[in-house]
Length: 162
Image (cartoon, rainbow, N blue to C red; front, side):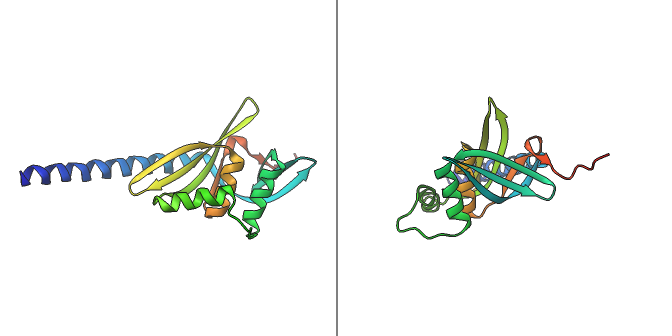
């Protein structure tokens, strides 16, 4: 009986290790088509906001609601609020369950809507969850994790004129 339990335990360890290696390789390979971006600024236009991300010659921007822009700005300026905001609560829930945000990936544009994934880690498990880019950036800026944008979505502002 003890030998059978030891064998099962070893198989679980080996299987977990294989999953860890495969998920790590997938995420690292996936990052080849992404560039890490930093929040450059938030510009307010009437009842909406434009979030600008940049890295060297590359920029990425998208429209969101004014309140989402304000939530991101609160995080990047480390403004303290009387009560926790939704994105702060999400971070606390993650911590309570031993889940750690790893990165945000803004992946694609479909029908004028941007899609992103928040990469989370718990123990040996790495998962990706669908998230709106504005919520993802609000969480990423609070968790101080990298923001990656698919190279296909970027504008190169350093293209030399011929």
